[in-house]
Length: 515
Image (tube, rainbow, N blue to C red; front, side, top):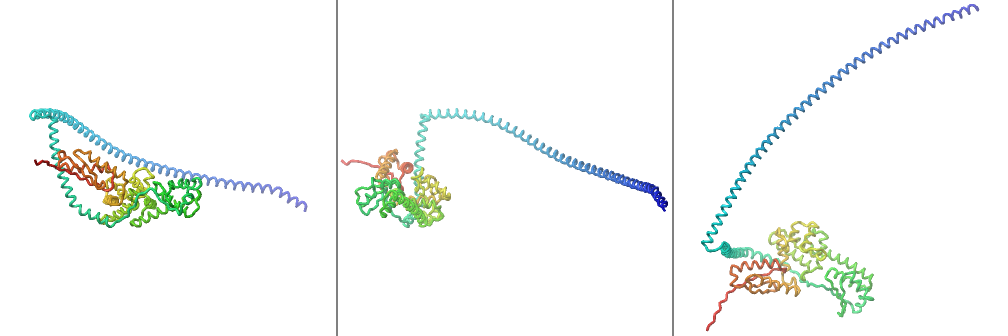
């Protein structure tokens, strides 16, 4: 039994290595076969990939060649087009150069021809001058007069003829203009004046404040005059406290300051507490009250005239004109009156009434601040109208209402006429005695300076000048021209309200004696 087992074991020991060797050899063969087949497949795959790559490469090369060929063709096409265009431009430039050369040649020929003509003209001028000199010498020899004497004689004769013709023409034109315009103008002006009436306000530089008693004067002066000094400093107005019973006089050229002082003093008198701090408080209140009053007066003026849409600052300046006067005429009342007159005249003529009223109301707006700014009230008014966006029509009417510039519309002419009517009507304005006498003297002196004037007399308060001429020096024809020259010179040199009538009088006297 043991022997069998040992035999089995020995067999196993011998057979097992043999079997393992055989199996490993078989496995190796199968592995080698597998590896060989894998290598073959990989070589096939590689060959196929190489073939595909070659194919792709050839296709890519073909595409690149095609793209290059296409780009080359396009470039050649574009180059041909550009060459063609450049050739066309070159042809045009060459043709223009040829034209320029031709024109230059023509100009040169013309210049040469002109030079020759100028030389010929110079020769002809010289010949004409020589002939003219010979003619003048011959004429002087025949007439027995020199050229200067003949010229003076000719000028005098022509001057006399021109004067006569001018005088006749002026008379004819004036008669024709008067015949056509006098009736209508009088009708328009008279109707406007009749429909518009205004009060007369006297110019003044003082205001009087009534006191309840004379003891109040001492309280107004205060201890060591501190109250009156404070009031004068705050308002810029002089307080005159004299022997006038129960009254204090406020003196100042600025009517706005005078009004502020008057209101403040009246409030202090009513309150009874008069000391520097209270004075300052009352002056501030009075200033605000006057400012409010100016706005209310401006709004009332625009409502009265019927003009709307004016800038609020312009309305305030209109109200400020209530405290301004010109030759005794209140500036705001004058502006309202001019606005009404302008509207009436515009309605008669057939022009826009609202625009005429607006121009009339604003024509003197510069007077509200002309004492605070440099320049005439006309220029200040024009600047204000431009600043607050008034129309060019209104600006021209403001600028032309004193004749400083030419009126560009009927509205401007209407405002001129209305302003003259308002200023020249009886009782509208007054002048100081010194201004009045100086104006009369200047008027007479101005007319006496003219050649041929014997005497002149200013009459009708300076609204008419009568000029007596020397009959031997001034003929009837010369009188018309003399009157026109006098009128122009008076307009140029003198300032006056309204208009001045110029009467030129020539008389011939024959004197004899009965013996």
